[in-house]
Image (cartoon, rainbow over all chains, first blue to last red; front, side, top):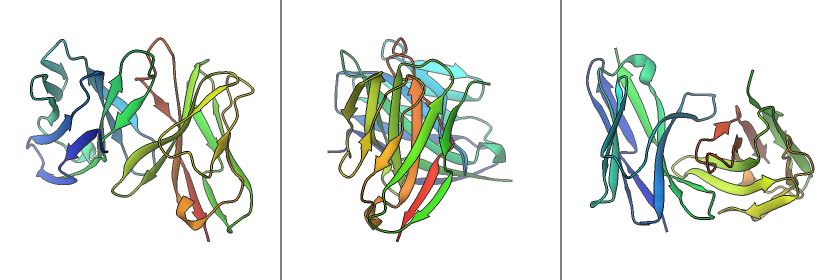
Length: 113
Length: 114
C-alpha cells in the first residue's frame, strides 16, 4: 500500500513560472512532512519541511502548503529557474516510536530556459 | 565537512558473488539507513539502525544484510546478489533528536548485477 501518493510524475515549467507538486497521505499518525531535492548523480537533500500545526511554510522561493483535513500537502516553487531542475520527493514521518520516513515516488521537474 | 560517504560509487558484479557496500558518516549520528531507488518506485527503505548493534528491517529487506558494529559505519551486504537487486543505493544518517526525519544522504552507489 502506497502511503504517500505524489503527483505529477514529471513536470515541465518555463523559466519564471510556478511549479506545483502535490502529495496525499492516509496515515493520520504522520506528524512531519519534509521535501527532498535530488540533482542528477547526487543523493537527496532536505529542502524544506512542515509540521501539521501550521498551514504554510515559506523559505525563499519554496513554499509548502498543508491541508490537514484533506490530508494533502504541496510544494510550490515560485519564479522557477533552470537550476531548480531536479527530482523532488515528498515524505512523511510517523510519530511515536516509529523513526521512519515514508517517501513519495518522486517528481522530475524540468525548468526550460 | 559533514558528510556521508559510500564506496564503491559504481559496481558491476555477477549473480551470486557476495559484495559489500560501505557507508560512513562523520556527524556522530545515531540513526543510519539504507534505501534503494528504482525508476517509478521512488526511495524504499531496506534496513535501518537506531544505534550500535541495533538494526531492523525496512520495507524491502529480502536479500540484504546489515551490521552496525561502530557508530559511524553501516555496511550493506548482498550475500548472493541477483539481477533484481540492480539499483541505485543510498545510505543516510540522522540524529534521533530529529526523529530521523532530517536525513543526510550519501552520493549513492549504482549496482548492476548481471
